[in-house]
Image 1: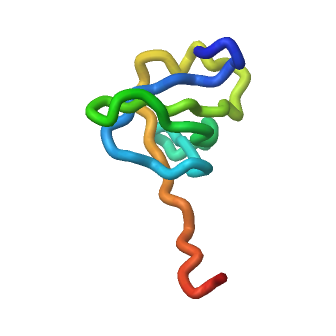
Image 2: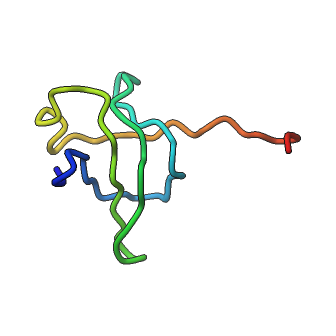
Amino acid sequence: MSQSRNVIATIESLPKIGETVVDENFKPLGTILDIFGPVSSPYASIKPKVQETAKLEDKMLYVLPSKSRKGKM
């Protein structure tokens, strides 16, 4: 947890800012706010949509890719 009440997580593959973070049951848990840290082992700041953020500790979280805006300008 950060001082601003966001969840900080290590990431294996680079998500995009704004993508939805879910658990293993595809329950939405939050949104990617920022990516920071060293390129070799970056972190993500996640704005939680759930009240009980302590339950997210030591859990594997997943990112749902955002829908492509292909063809829209």
